[in-house]
Image (cartoon, rainbow, N blue to C red; front, side, top):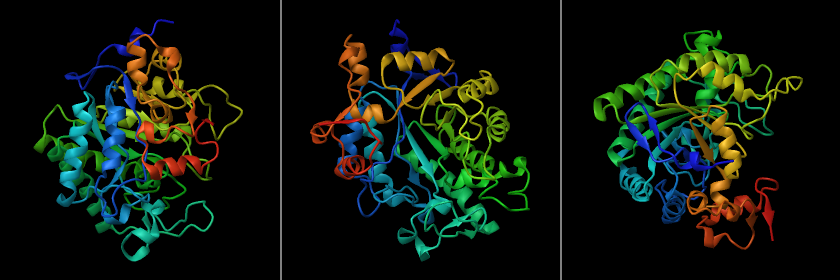
Length: 372
């Protein structure tokens, strides 16, 4: 299988050049400073992984104090965080990659001990299906409007910091997904009820971010959106819901859509009788209207080629780029067989993996394929 396709340039939004279709996927590092600023360890981690890839999407940052979802998460909700954000953008771009700041609000998945008043908020007062999870408080209209504006303010910070774009994180059970989900959204106002009304909050966030970008950055600033195709909860997001949502998202003038799944070729997690890959239905629904980033257990050049040949515009490497920062350079130098697809327990520091992330990997069985 010829792998030259992995090195060929791509275009976003008709005029943004991307040197190749390989993307560093957004993954939390647990390694920000205690004050929410970007740490030196994170800068080293991104510098090592930005060389070669076309795009780097950062770990997600939170747009307001009530949205913090991870310990050691860096923040972007006011100008005090701008110096660190500038250094992060410069670090990524200095290695030749486009820098995308992913932004989110944790909603009911926020950390109670690390948010104001210790009370989570969400679309409705429905607890996540997690042992010991807090029941969130239903957001008021004012809080909804404030959160929409907060996404716009974080987009402005990204522009001021020199990022090439932002990714709106609407996946992985966080606030935007909570509004789309019939499990977490039981509202009967304009923000909930029918599947169409459950889309209104993420669409309002997209509209606000687009407005800020138009005013502050212009046409060459990237706006992406990430989604999770299904939920296991009942009621929960079905693939049919997501296909309706994708149909709307594809017409929003976004730079790309980005799925969040564990395996690029996985079938439905809700309907196990249907064994066909859901990615085929997603790509059929997009129908070429907007570039698509595929992700999930893509390790080797052959895996990446197969994903691109399915119709994905870009492929994102997550765990693989942690294990192998030199993935692209090994393809470029004709040494694909030297690409590391397991993580040696002795290699952490030499791979510029921050200690909190390294500890999380070591303490989470099955997350990474480990060797001694």
